[in-house]
Amino acid sequence: MTRRGDVTFEPVKVQSRWSAVMLALLILVALSLPALYVYEVYGYSRFEYRVTTEGIEARYGLVNIRVPAGEIAAVSLVEDPGSLSRTAGTGLPQVQRGWWTSSTLGRVYRLTTSGRLGYVLVETTPDARTARAGTRYLFSPADPEEFVRLAEAVRRGDAGVLGGQAERSFPPVPTAQGSVAFSWPMLLLLLDIPLIAGLVWFVVRGRRSLLYRVGPRGISVRHLFGWHHFRWDRIRDIRRLQGVRAVRVIGAALPGYFAGTFHARGMGSLRVYATDLHGDVILIEGAGGSRVVISPADVDGFLAAAAQHRR
Image (cartoon, rainbow, N blue to C red; front, side):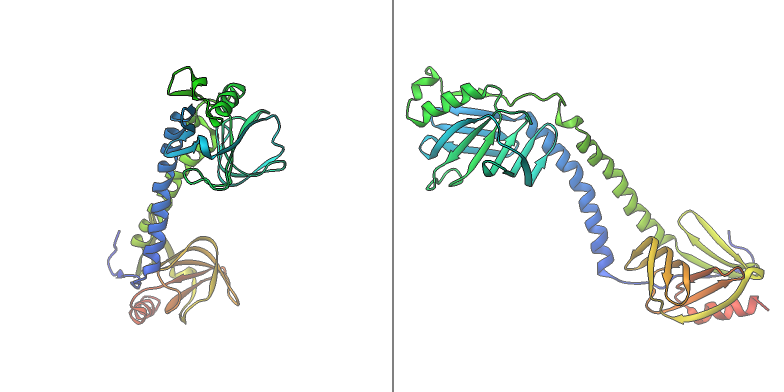
């Protein structure tokens, strides 16, 4: 609320493309999280393996692995692949997808649901064209023995093993954790969405809320949801500084927006409510040793108003 005699000062306006870029990146991350969640749920709903008259297929979401019969080098049941460590991809309790390293098999592309012993290893020929050449795929069909039997027969050219059918579908091994939608890593991912959205909102709101006033009772700084008041009898000194080199302790430190607790060499702890720390700023020193930094656009006018009211 403006009182009689108060003079209002806007913060210095800073045009920084980096501020816009950083906000855009935060928004992009916030939007990508639900997209990732939806994709994993969708991918898991389409998860299946197939043995067809033409070869082997594995499908997960938009991933469709096809290995023609002529490009299958070997299909084998792997009782124990040893320890598996993820290189790139997804490692949820319900599904493991991407490149992994096995202590016994080397580098494999893994598309599995099971952490138990018993997998199917599909190896492609070095000259494969449709499939990735010289690759090892690790699968976990619900009936691995039957999958290996049918795939090996198709590899040898015995398409009749499918009993006149065009394909045989195998679901992945079911997991005790249930759907990917209720996986705790995915739920934590969803929790990040409001957190990032809230962070973006606070940054935009905080920068737009900054305002300074000088009046008969002292100096007031508006930030976010309210005003911070500094009475004249609690102010020891007010002076201009030609920039401040400070390190953020807690708060925001973005191009065009600095708010929170900072630390500057030679001055110690600072409370900052500013849009720019490189140009001229105002230092308000409290009687108890507190220090506040602000960045009014009209530094000379601010100092003149402060001198007039402190008389």
